[in-house]
Amino acid sequence: MPSEFFNTSEVLEAILETIDEGIHVIDPKGQTIFYNGVAANHDGMKRSEVLGKPLLEAFPSLNHKSSTLLRVIKSEKPIYNYSQSYVNAHGRIIETLNTTLPIYVDGFMIGAIEIAKDYSSLKQLSERLADLESSLKTIKSPERKTTGNGLYSFTEILTSDKGFKGLISLGKKAARSTSSVLVYGESGVGKELFVQSIHQESSRSKEPFIAQNCAALPESLLESLLFGTAKGSYTGAVERQGLFELANGGTLFLDELQSMPIDLQAKLLRVLEDGFIRRIGGTKSVQVNVRIMAAMNIDPKKAVSENRLRPDLFYRLNVLSYELPPLRERIDDIELLSEHFISIFNSKLGLSIKGMDEKTKDFFRKYHWPGNVRELKHTIEFMMNHTENDVMNLEDLPQFLKKRNPSEKILPLREAMIEMETKLITEALLQTNGNVFQASKLLQIPRQTLQYKIKKHI
Image (cartoon, rainbow, N blue to C red; front, side, top):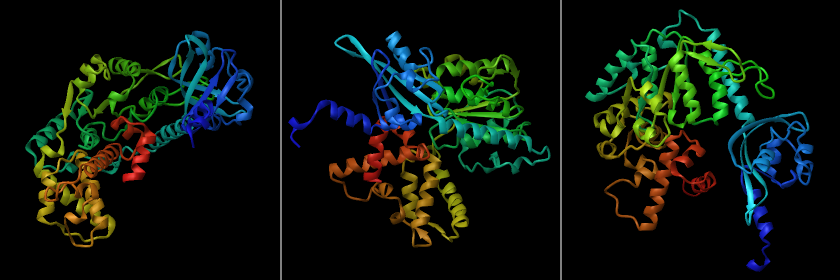
């Protein structure tokens, strides 16, 4: 269609309708002038109930102080990543995470736009998880064997690498301590396995081990999940224990600590210092006896220099810190672990694969393994699901790995670029356990772009 037939406002509206986040725009008087379908779905409203109407008429539970849109109209200052809880016109509790910005034209503010993410369902899921953790804790038997709670122990960490064996010895010594632990290394090297093993070896082994990924939740939700909530602290809030209370007597493992917001890191530091927590909206402090173990997939010093980790928190955690080596630095472990995974999947899949041929073993030793042990495990599982032989060979490799075979001819540049793009996407998905949003952050591309490329290349 020729460009002269396009109407700029219609094109803009069409674009805003395709975005998978809620878009709500009001004018300076507080009247809604744009409201996309995603926003309506988030809010449990019909567009006709909101569009063209004053904001407080459409959402009577809000006021000039609680509405982020109206606050931005008044202050003319943006509000980033703010959680909002309110009741819609139909009595349903809505939870959103908003970024709200003033709109300027020629230096004059003409309104405010709000980009909202719905995390009502995510919040409910996290609260159900906390409830489940609580119920599991109440039925915990003091006679339970340490090997029967589903956690890993040091005896299950397979290695022939001298350096890694030294780390295991240090980990066993850490198990005798009550100090906090920091483990870091690339994704897939086995940080949680190492941390679980310390817990299993410790005097807390019969107490709870609770893990939480700090990158999985927005700040306000992560805070309430960790510290719990007091009744009435926000609309619909009930008295609920947080993970600190649920882990009392045991271990709380915080993965991807560098993703925890800086303000929340300060609260974590206070808990480490005095052992007291206070529920969100509560007035009394509760003492907890929890050992904190944390993990990071980047060097802590780099995280500090990039202002992703508070220096004081780093120094507090750095008493017992361990850097786990990547698989490419443990060459002898590649074959050892491959044989272990073949045995596991033979049993799981009802197969009788004998192993790999020498060319495949040689390829495994030379490959970089950016996804480390996790990538090796997934690769073995893929090969065993696809092979027609009792000894696997190079033809059984996943397509992106097969193209890494040095014996193959040089690809044309366009094909090589597609191969590299596919490889990076696959590695990002491996490192994030298939989480497209987290993978898009690693690759620094929009989530929609990544979803398109996955459909196109994988």
